[in-house]
Image (cartoon, rainbow, N blue to C red):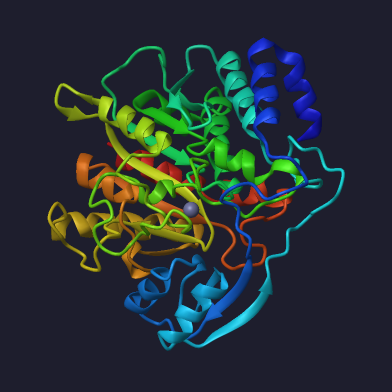
Length: 416
Ligand SMILES: [Zn+2]
């Protein structure tokens, strides 16, 4: 979004400073790899992973799982490859990760050339400010706290009388926990723009906004997403930027590190951190969610955390293969299943319990439900497979975010 960014720089002081900060904190385009960067980015297909148990075994080797199914596509280094083979898996090479649009001369503070339709952190912030200034009374912008590198974790609220905490059911949308999953940020922006721009002329949008408080956090991991596009090329970066990086979605404080669904090794792509909420980003978001418990009642009733990719609708728990567990009755599990399948019928994603893929612990969904009884889903967006994987061209943004409109409406309706 090069044209848009020059507009941003012309808008005013605060945004200009953010844009400059974004530029300053990006890594140099050339030279030594920054600490924590992956040296090896070879893609492999692990065959015969036709059960969640086998896929959990694969994930536990510390590989970067890209796709999980009857075979599992991973990025693995030489040691992980040897471990997989010693476990008896047949592993086939699928070549090295190709950085799409890796063009010299690309603008360091923007997406790689050809992908400027994606919003940088500064552009997201400008969009949110514009939504507020264009729709006085309908939207407010604040922050839940700061990222490790000091970026504001923007929080946009949409409701009638947005400046007042009314007694209305609340819905939360979070995006970009994982750095390279840039399409999710566009999903959150789609929600912001649809429910603000659409308010005046769309009766059903007006009704949803009038009777709910809709919260959107477009960048849970802005340090990671800015790093991922630094130097005008993609870095295949997943985690935050604290040390070697913590996987935010293994750092939440419900059954944290319990069950072999995360790694204790800082170099792993699923490093859970030294303690629950050790990542400033998850700590800030969780503290804010805790603060929405008003008079003993959690105001937020439903939530979607957007990820890419694989086209899935996932529900908790992730830490156990069982459908029911402490805090998840059969009736509650059925509600998750029913709504998950209903949403998946609108976007043609595949619905399943998170652990049907493989075990994860410390995920946002488990915490939201386990601690707050928030009806919390993960959407794994477009594409279904590794081509184009994490980096679909910006031409698909409109189609693939609009695709979730009906599901978004359903999760708002489910809040009450
Ligand atoms: Zn993700």
